[in-house]
Structure formats: structure tokens, C-alpha cells
Image (tube, rainbow over the protein chains, first blue to last red):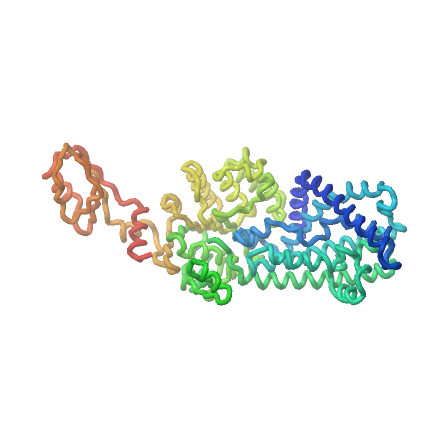
Length: 267
Length: 325
């Protein structure tokens, strides 16, 4: 535990160095936030009468998504880890007295937290002061806010656990682009990143609710907007925890198996 | 301390001839060849010894080191190091060993060396007081005080290697594996690294297993060498033994007054000649050095003669040839 914490701290510290990247990211995320919102505005003006969420809720949803992007996106990758695998530097990781899974999990989490810490506050402050209807609507009460933070946190843990599976797959494929692309395209949609799940057709919603991805984006954000009532939110967090443990156990097991067969590349 | 018994490890290597046609073909059908990296290697190493592990590129040195440090799992054989089987009890076992892979880095690239050290302190759960003591010792003996607060990417290779070795010793391991620790270093850094290795071996009794291609490392450090070639162990003993077995050649450099006839020296291979200088190689099993010199004196007006024992480097080349490595 102490070692995982240490590595998380160092990775966080390292991530805070990238101020220029954060600034550029800030601009990009605000820009895309506006694009998303304009598309939804058009959709609400000319679309069906009752789409399942109010425009206000969808706008808040979009801004939160932009603010906490680094906690939610699967395509965010740590090239260092990929290099460790494909170049053989993993040799050093393997002679440390702790599970490589924990080690990497902490690294990835630290990186995401650092990136989010630099970006989320400025974006949130800017969008709070945007004129209606483009601004962020605060949650109804403190309890929703608290539940949102819990769900967001567990969701982040889930995202890291899923991305660990991507890294593990690279041991077999030796090439990160394929795994990332596959995961990123499908998960982004299934998580409700492109459009919130309630706006999807019913048959698709049924599929989405069976998979874990919507717990990483759609679920926490709709708690914030109040679209998911509190009781349902608490149940959902329970489901999140179950999924999280399944994903972590699966990842740790796969990693252990694959490390026994690992070929350390390059002499 | 270390007992290795009949370990073997083979790798599957995808194989295809170059060219587009074969590249297309390999999409559908891939041919693999099994490469036996090491075959039935056995040795024992007592505590406190420095062992040089040598062999040509691709002989299986690194594979053996990786097996002994718990990174790779061998196909056959057993290995017991301090009572542990490295690949079975990996997390427990690795607390007792330090590893330096000369071609890789364990330090975090973008942060000062000190940050990497502190991370290792937490990973190995080193108590604060012993961490401080070890760190002080390392800073002093490896001369790190000036570089320890510099980000790794700004260090020279020699400086980095000193930091790497320091990083592997922070948790006071009983065994240190050094995989080419002097690769790419200049003469001064090499000597510094060697002296340090010797010192920790003497003062703290650390068992050291070292692979290298630099025979000066071996001569300066190792009392015992293991020679491996094509995956099998070929020689296990000290350097004197190696010299006795293979080092029967002497090199004679003779300088003389201008002489333009060819030299007649039976049983001697002439490495180079000019009008007033010849370098000869003599196998002392075939003929002795004094005979050669007297033959030479009969033909030319000798000015100066130097006789050199065969450098260990040449002995190794000769051994590689002999074993057809």
C-alpha cells in the first residue's frame, strides 16, 4: 500500500509539470464543449418532444464531461508503460517486491489525477459563469454533489481498471494502437460520452446498461444533474463497486498469468 | 548461497525471409523456430564471491541473469537462491537482490535522481534510519553529491550508471546482479565503477554476479569466471586456470636495423613486419621464446625486444574460436 501510494504521488507530481499541455487541453475542451452544446441545442429545437433529458441537464452533462475528461477517457495512455513492455524495460518492474498490477494501477491513477487537477477547476469556474442556457447548473443539493463525487471516484477507479486490460493486451500484441482504438471507439460510445444514455434508442440502452462502461461517464454525470434520483444513485454505486472488483480481479489474474510467459524484449 | 541446477530456457522466434512475398505469406502462416537460449546450466556460488559471467553476444548470459532474478521462468531445472526459488517466490525473494541492467534504466527520466531513490525507499519499505545511512554511504563512495538533485535526462551515461548502481543497493541486498554495468562508459567511470564493486564486496560481503564484454572488468574484479557459449557452460574456474589452459601464446615485438629480406622463423606466426620492426606470435607449446629470439638474432641486428603474455581479451577470442562460438 505504501509503495502504491508513493508511486501515485510521484506520478502526480510529475503530471503537474505539464502546464502548457494543460493550458492547451483547457482551450480544446472548452471548444469541444461548445460544439457539443450547439449540436444538442439544434437537436432539441428540431427533434422529438420529450427526449428523456432537459436541455439544461444535457448542457451541464457536457460541461462536466469536458472538465473531468482525464478521469473518464480510455484513450488517455501512458506511453511510458507501453515502452516498458515493448522495449523490455519491464525487467526492472519485475524485480520489485510488489505486484506489478498494483504498481501500474497506481501509476495510471496518479497520471489521471494530476491531469484532472490541472484542468477541472478552471473549466468548472469558467462554465459556472457562462450565460444561460450555456452555463453549468449546480446540483440540487449537497447530497447529490457528494454522491456525484463518490460515483466519479469509483468510476475513475473503474476506468483505470479497464485501461489496465488494454496494457495487458499489449503483452500479446506488442502494439498499443490496435487495442486502444478498439477500446476507445466502443467504450466512448457505450459509456455515454458521445451522447447521454437516456438519449439513445431503447434497444441500445438495454445493451449499454448490461455493460460496465456507462458507470464511468453517464452514471456520475447524471447524478450531478439530478436525472438519477438519490436512492438509485446509491444502488448504482453498489453496482460500480461490484464491477470494479470484477475488473481488478480479472486484470490482476491475467497479468499474473501473462507475466509468467513474458518474454523480455531486446536482450 | 546460489544453486542453479540444470536450467534450460527456449524462446519461440517468428521467422521469415525478407521481402514482400514472404511478408504477405506470414500473414496467413507463420513459421516459428525454437531457439534454445540456455541448455542445462548448473553451478553453485558461495556467499561473498564475485563471479564474472562471460560469453559472446547471444550466448544466454542475460537470460540466466533474468532467471536468477525471478523475471523469467525457465522451461526445466531448479534454482535455489538463499532458499528461494526466484520465479515462484518472486515478491519475497527480490527484496534480497539488487539488479542493474546496463542497457536499461530504472530511474525516472524526468525527475531528479533523489525522487527515484525516495520512491525505491517506499517500494522496498526501507526504514528511515537505515535508508539515510545507506544513502550517505552511496553518495560518498559513488560520488553522487553533485548529481543527485539533477533530473536523470540531464546526466551523462557515466553519471547515470553510478546512480543506477546506487539505486540497486539502497535496500542493502545480499546479492547484486550486474548485467553489463560498464557498457559505454569511459575509462575513468569504468575504474570508478570497478572500485566501487570491489569495495562493497569486501566491506559488506555482497555476492556479485557480473556479465560483461570488457575483459578488464573481469581481470580487475572476478576471482572466478563462468564462460557460456551457445547456451551451455564451457568453463568454470579462475583466470589463472584459463591462462594455463589457453594462454600459451606470447607476443614478441622486435626492433632491428633496416633489413629488407623476409624473416625465416618456423612455427611462428608473423603478425606484422616493417623494415625495422616485427610483431610475432609464438605458441609456447610448439617452440620456446628464447629459440625464436636467437633465430631472429641470427638474421637481423636486434635493437630491442619485448615479450608480452597474451592479453585475456585474446584468450577469450581464442576460446570462442576453439568452441566455435
